[in-house]
Each structure stands twice: as structure tokens, then as C-alpha cells.
Length: 449
Image (cartoon, rainbow, N blue to C red; front, side, top):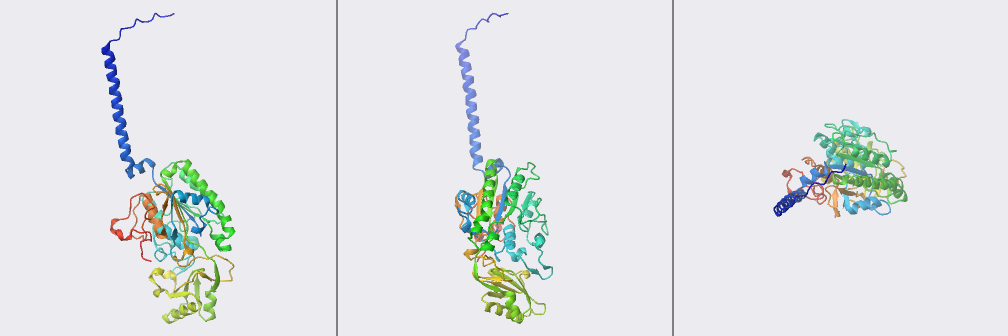
């Protein structure tokens, strides 16, 4: 049944005016509110704390490409990493610590101090009390606090996939909550898969805020065939594809707003035409001693009854006659940084072009030489939260990596760290205590060379 339409009431001019006034008032209030919100947004945009709150908790992913040189960062060998370097920040060279070998440098990258301080003085060595270094329990030999322990004590979860020294708890503090037992057979695809799984965790008590990871890099191929050999490019190609996948996934998930991705290496690589077998040289001259190390650096531990100053001076003389630089440890130049007794009785360096060997080894690539040698330079590339894009950092020190990571995580830098955060890399404030003063604000690790 259709109802009759209601009769229309006449519209008065007074009613129209009142409605219009009400609408204009609502519009004005809306504009004022929008303006206030815009002003607050502008203020927040200039406030790093507000930015950090909006982006979520800061996260750092630190990846090492073992034995990879700045010269390897090319379109032919590492195109994806090179593209990231062009977008973000890149060092001309990262100067390693001495000796420029894998174990001591990875631990220095994680502690910000020289091997003479953190105690992992070479890939092989002997402690006067504990005996021969146990390569399967590196974490138990570290004497300075690593960044994962600092982060864990601050309540930040950490994880590690094969970073040297992260396999267990630090001697006087925690290790990473998540670790993996080392196997050289593990592919970089497996490592990237795990990094992405860690970053996908939703529970803040489990999701790592610091992830450290070791890649094979160019090291094995460089040792076997020499730096720049075709096998080096072949070894780096699949790793570069995984770097590209990691970057794509972080971008697709919008994680670069809160995540900083840093790639480093531990040392360079160089060929050698001359080989010197220290053990053979010493035995030929009737000296009984142990030698540790190959390539550009070695330590000599004299026999228990052969450690008088005269005995050690004779060893030094024999080594120098073989064309190497040698010092009694207690007389070595300060910039060798060999104060720790784990460096043995006599320390030895070879010049570029000569390699210390222990057998008739057929390997073609070596490292361990003086950190200032251009051939020993490592690389550093950073991109993501807090990084100044398009930045060239010049020459930086391995000792600066740990304090830079702590700055990115918003954690204070301990006084014992010798390095300072890399100047020019980040847009964030310096977390280093003010007592250190301005004299250490430079990209050389905070020390004279």
C-alpha cells in the first residue's frame, strides 16, 4: 500500500544561514586540526628519536666476505654488492689489524680492539699457560667483550651464522642466542634463508636486533689460484646472487627503514714468488723452536731452555738473514701491537712478494702482511637505516666496525674499544662517552699509525 507523501515545509533564509555557518565552522576546525597534525609531523620528521619510534627498533645485519678485496668489487664479480655500494656508503679501503688473517680480524671487527688485547692473535698460536689454541672453541679464547655480548646484556637479542668467535658464550658474558655449528660446506643460500627467517620473527624477545654472518668470499679461491684468478669470480658469483636476494627481500618487506646492512671483509690477498720455510731455516742452523703462521706473519716460540736474550737475538739474526723482518717480541715496534705473550718470543713479517711457509705448499695467494700494505685492504659497504647514501668514506679501520654497529643500535661504546664510529657513515648521534674527547674523531681507528 502506498503512503501519501508528507507535505513539505517552507525553508527559511534563517535556517539556510545557520546550516552554512555550522558547515563552515566544522570545515575550519578540520583545517586547524590538519594543520596541527602537519606541524607535528614536521617536528617529528626533524626529530631522530621520533623517526626511530616510527620505524621500529633498529636492527643491524653484519656480513663478512672472507678474503675479498676492494678490487673484487666490480661489475664482473660482485655486481649486486657494487650496486648497493653506489646507493649507500662505501670505504675506499678497510685497513685490517695485524696480523691480517681471518681469526684475529674477525674478532677485532667484533670487539673494536687489536689482537694483542682480545687474545686471538693469529689463526694458530700457543698460550704460555693454556697451550695450543683450540680452533673449535674460539669463543673461549676471546678476552675482550664482543658486540653480541654487549647487545645481549642491554636486552637486545642477537644471532650469528658462523662469525668467528660466536660459536658459544664469551668467557665473561653471553654469546648470541642463536648460533650455528660451523661447516665449510654450508652454502650462502642457506645462510640468507636463515637471516630472513630470523628477521621475520614477530616476538621481540626472539627476533634478533644484531645478526652476524660469515660468507666464504674470495678466500679459498684466492689461496688456491691467486687473487684475481677466474676461480675467484666463479666463487663470488653465487654469493653475489644471494646478496641481491637478501637486498630484494629486505626492500620488499620494508625493512630498510629499521635495518642497516653492512658488508665487510677481513683482509686482502696477494701472490708471492719467493717462499721461506722458517722451520727449515732454524733447524738448518741448529735451533729448536716452534713456528706459527704462514704468509706475511709468523711467531716463533723458542724451546724452554733456549729463551735467554742471547738465544732470541740469534733467532732474530737467522730470520733476518732469510730476508724477513724479525724482532724479539719485547723489542718490536709499538705499531706491530704484539704485547700479548701469545705472540711468542720472536715475531716475523715478510715483505710483499715473499711468503712464509711451513711446507712445499702449492697455494698461490697469501695474506697476513702489514695492514698498511694496499694488497691487504679489505672492503666495507653499508646501506639502510642511518646510512648517508652516496657516501665515499675513504680509508677506515677494522677497529671502527664494532663501535659503528653499537652506534647504529643506539648503544654506548665501551671505553676499552680503541676505534670510534666511522665518521660520515651514519646520520645518527654519537653514543661514545664524552670523556674520550674530540681528538679521536677520525677514520683511522682512533690511534696513530
